[in-house]
Image (cartoon, rainbow, N blue to C red; front, side):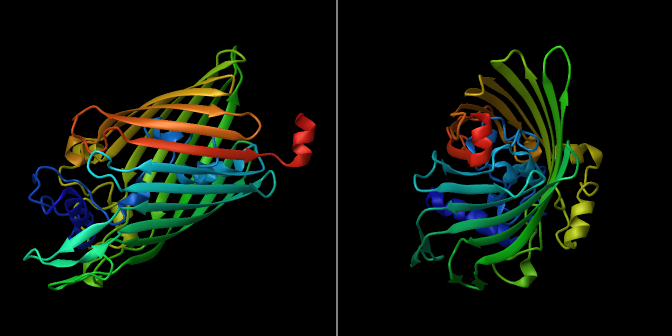
Length: 379
């Protein structure tokens, strides 16, 4: 079995086994209770800007990728319409044909309303399946996608709400039949709910405070096999804050902090979706000490020169018992103040040189356009 076979086995197993049971995948250490879900690709950061900030994106100033991080931010976009394209070679330390693409777009209906849409596509490359006797079972190209539609509305000058509807498709094995396992693709739906607050702060130097809260991927359980093996999708709570300080007319800094918590049961997969969401804050076997370990910390600093050139640094911190992802992120950005932008991000693990995420690169292109009437006023 090569490395890609192992990756697919792990992904497929996460959809079949009872994810809440410790030590069920490949004999893992039972002292570690890593929470696994179906369709984890939904949580992978798609764009280079927020990825370079340690995945701290809930309260980050909005751009064309805003809806992924917080649907409520979209209405605060200053431009009338725009879009983008992001591409990420995935797990490049292990394989060379896995990648993620993200295609977002938005449109301002009015000053108080905006809509957005996006397509996220995850291609896992080609794989040859083999049976228990090493007999060939055929070749397949596993793939997953999510299609989103977002509505964002401003309620006050500083506060907005947003709602995203999501269609989810995941096909890891095609119509593979092996023994008693009859695999099938996943077709499902989910929603995101978000709120966003942003307020200029008058002081000796211009500054701004932004706060955000998002619950993403609220949806039914899914299964790659049958209804007896249904598992939670990655419902996630994200709380974020961003503080921006303009040092002078040319230089500004933004300091970001996000907290993430999977709203998925630690040990009891038999709960309902709502029961699992609310119970996820009190069901850890080791009590409050373990519940705290289920939070992921994302932090970052973004520097802009003349709103044209950006440098970014961030850090992603996850408890050892809950996955042990720890890495630094770096990035650069450029904006043509009329319409065009480009971002690049680079990931550097801090806990292991052999981390499969090591050296992950992300690339994003953006375009954002004002209406002709607005352009003539500003020119």
